View 1 (cartoon, rainbow, N blue to C red):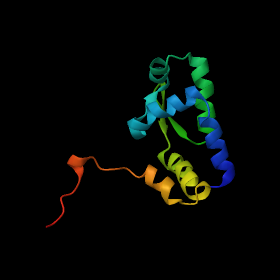
View 2: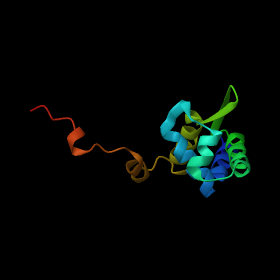
View 3: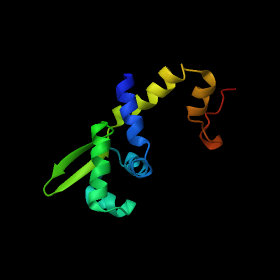
Length: 116
């Protein structure tokens, strides 16, 4: 990801409502939610939501699709991953301490037993 795309994405995420919107959509994967469902979950008006959705779409962090009379929104996982990759690789220069904090850790019950 180039610097201008990363800046646009980070700028779009630098807002409480938009960050909450992305956090609500990520676990839903490509199915996403309708605009009405998003507005209800976040407790925002339709016009305010439209503004925030537009900003996130322009930054390519979310995608929309129309089904009948409804518009559904979902996170663009590749773009969001690109932003994360940009931060880890370009900004942090793959610093081991930063990478260590971002690597998922196994809970004890998930650990693979050693062969012994």
